[in-house]
Amino acid sequence: MTVTRDVPRETSERLSAYAALLRKWNPAINLVSRSTLKDLETRHIADSAQLFDLAPKNAAHWVDLGSGGGFPGLVIAILAADAAPQMRVTLIESDLRKATFLRTAARELGLENTNVLSQRIEAAPPQGADVLSARALAPLTDLLSFATRHLAPDGVALFPKGARHDQELEAALATWRFTVQKIPSTTDPQAVILQIGGIARV
Ligand SMILES: C[S@@+](CC[C@H](N)C(=O)[O-])C[C@H]1O[C@@H](n2cnc3c(N)ncnc32)[C@H](O)[C@@H]1O
Image (tube, rainbow, N blue to C red; front, side, top):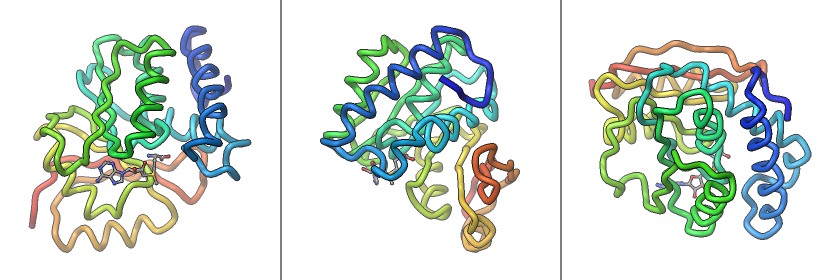
């Protein structure tokens, strides 16, 4: 499997096995839109994998909100299994069928670092995450609210955002204070990853 970074053979094999599971389950659960399934490796897997390099390598707990079919959370868990063995990864996904897919995939891929919470983000116990991610979940203002529940005070949030990221930042600054770095996406020239810390209400 091709991702944007070099990975050990075990990681590459797990990513391929994950892609096969997604293709098998997708007709029944619609984990990714059918039009993007043919580009799974770039549109979803490589797009998710790039986040791993933006997080501190010694992070102990990564939490992914609204994981859906596992983007970016399950890709992060696969990369971490070999590259950051101390890291555990929690996926929060309220849709029971998707959560069942995530649990089944984690088990079949032999991922012992992964825990799936089939709960709403707003109801799940605060996670104290060192790294928090959320892709295609909600406007930045809402993501920052989720972050105050689940991110440790010195943790970092990684939110991939599309072409309208500047408008989302402007809207969020009306109610939130935070530090932000805009990192260009390696898979989409219009997209960025917002690397955010120090979140507090205005
Ligand atoms: C548009 S999908 C994106 C999935 C994945 N992150 C991706 O990039 O492909 C949003 C996902 O978040 C889940 N979700 C939405 N609101 C949620 C909430 N409040 N708590 C938990 N999961 C939620 C939905 O069930 C859905 O699977």
